[in-house]
Image 1 (cartoon, rainbow, N blue to C red):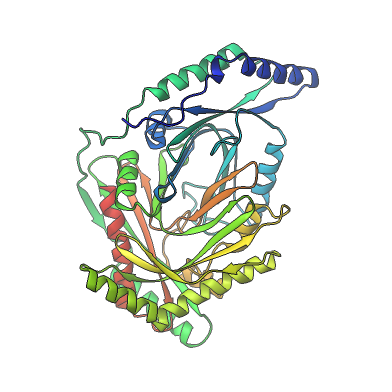
Image 2 (cartoon, rainbow, N blue to C red; image 1 turned 90 degrees about the vertical axis):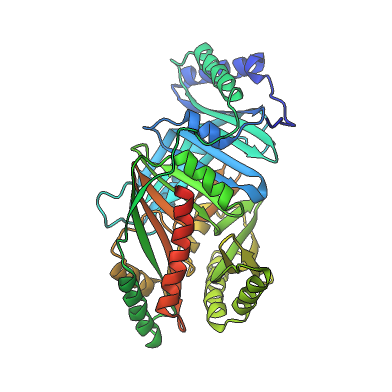
Length: 471
């Protein structure tokens, strides 16, 4: 059992919290208002994934986000308020939704501790409209969770967001908080369910290899005629299991097999979950310092140290892979400059994952107070790393060749707090879980010099790594 260096505060027993809530309620009564209160408490160590497993309700939306490299994990459970929309204005409307809610939130507790205070969880689809009518997620979802449990450097924080109005019973609300604290403190670290047997899968390749290779060949013709510099073409693998996929078992597997990736999951409250292990950060903002990544150009890992080094050396020297990487780097710096930011490009390096390695260039900038994180997300999504260049022609090629809905695949997912800090990733190496069915997604960047057989092999490598974690 892990012991936390952060002992739980006894705010729930504290008269200050009771007085605070009574004063908020008096103000609501006097002015005919309803107010959202965000209560942050330090708690003993708990695994946020276990908390999500035990607290999540099937009919509520949830969000999970973990980065083991940074010692961070955060679970958002159920929604106090949410926005679900489609259309071109989704980023603008999401920004307005967050700002207007923040004006109506009052916080209690130590807001200096990690992940304290209100956090809005956001996920957007690749396109502003989904073509598939029954796709299970809208093109934008933003919500403020009822319960938020986070871990940072072995310290845990519980946030309860709740609506206060003239009719709320403060004693019952506090009792509910006490009960939740007791329940969370009783949770054991994660262990795979002993009765959970490995799934037997019946696989069905929806987009056959020959079809994918024909799409790559067709895209290469466009590239050779200079209509296009790059396009990212994805493929899917549909699988069916002899039992329902276990979300928490799959996430635990993902974090063990991909410790240097972002592990994520979103649910729609109707039984479907979108999960994955993404190597690609879109943006992080902390104290107005922005970091984003140009991540494009890839090679497999070697079976021996010598083979691995040879693959890395070929990747660093490959004209084709460096060209693909440069397209992404140039796009990000141009788009940030258009927002009035001054991007600083750091030296390129390798990002080495368990089964694949990428060319990686971190890019930094300072974010002015008047530039909301979602303005930057809207400006950068989608980068050429997941779409292509020129973007509009790449869009047409994606819609023409991909017979499935991308939905949340290769799209931004993340969180924003009340201070404008945020973290967004790109939802690649991902899967849509729906009961006993799963749809796995992976893509490859097609540029001049791409070979259809090799690109298909790269996509299969990514799909197989994901499939292993799910079962």
